[in-house]
Length: 210
Image 1: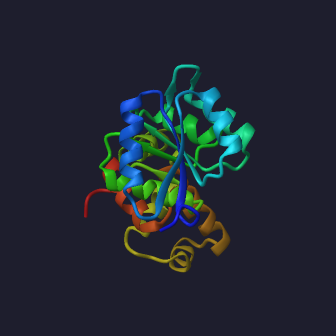
Image 2 (image 1 turned 135 degrees about the horizontal axis):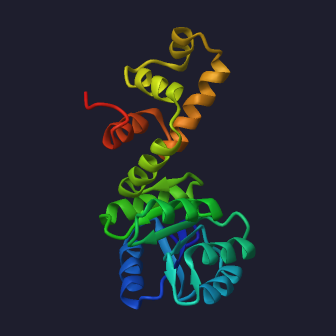
Image 3 (image 1 turned 90 degrees about the horizontal axis):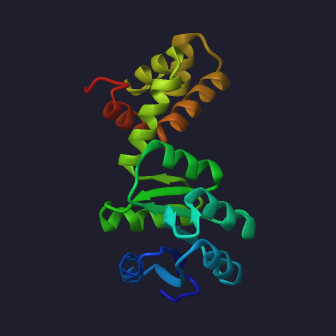
């Protein structure tokens, strides 16, 4: 695949070995091209402003800025930039902060190569991605802090394979209200679909293993 039709990636990481490793891994994919690299937030802002790219891979710890500051700088230069954080840290606070300031994805560096490549492809499509280990920690925190009794009830019914129409009929809710509850559940579990929600809820203890 030519560079013109490939997913164009900019890598921002202050560790040369890590950056080269990511570059080699992604550059070996037929549908991905690494078009530029940067070692700090200031350099990243300059590179991104002048480079056509689809995804920005960004380390959460840079020498001249925190992860959230770096993301904010990129978004300020290129609003709507598709940023995928690639970090060694999976603490819920780090994940939540990165997503809140504009990152579209969050991948953990110890993930297998296929997961990171898949994350790049997902973010390039404009869809959110969070590594399972990071998502589970964030979902567990959000469940403890704010999973409502109604959401818990709907989650259990979803696990039975019921559709929104069936859930609405069982609980005496409108379809619109039911969809809003399901959407809130997906957000809290950091997933994009109902199947992934059931799997994540089981992993973090919201649901008992079936």
